[in-house]
Image (tube, rainbow, N blue to C red):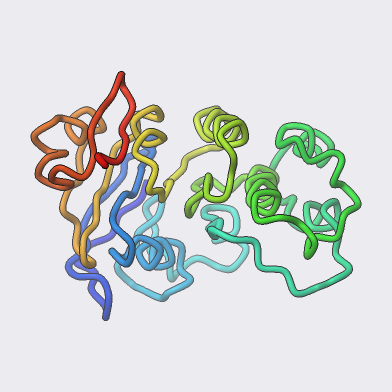
Length: 230
């Protein structure tokens, strides 16, 4: 489904991995490790001839083909139009999904905000709107950059359930949340200083020896949850 070979730039070094059809991926790493930069390369925001998507070089896709095959969802809603409301934003986002805008609003608990200007949304509301727009876009592969940032626990749980259901075709999720990564169970790629330090199954990533290698004594597991070891 996705393949990138020997890619390097000012931030990334010798990036090389692939995902098979039907596989999903979690990208983990410290701040500044290059996670978002990698995401932008994978979806063509940063140009590269090293990325292959569904058997075709990404830079050979037309704009319409690219919109069908891949979508990047940023970590924060950036809005400059003071008049565009939530419903209008979702109308512009709806491309390939069978979901209606009403269904997307209900799914993300945004119905009461339908006519609210996007520019007035809180950071958490903006995060939910981005997820709703990705469902309505419905690309074959969606890259989510920190989808649970700025969300309270109840909303985070709701988003985690959506990220694991069949309303999304295939997904790559960038996150700092080890508990989200563990519960979703997807293959994991861990980055450090622009390099891939780990790329393997969820089970192998969460082996104690691997966690000790990557995090030292900074985290501990309590009753199945990973917490900062204060």
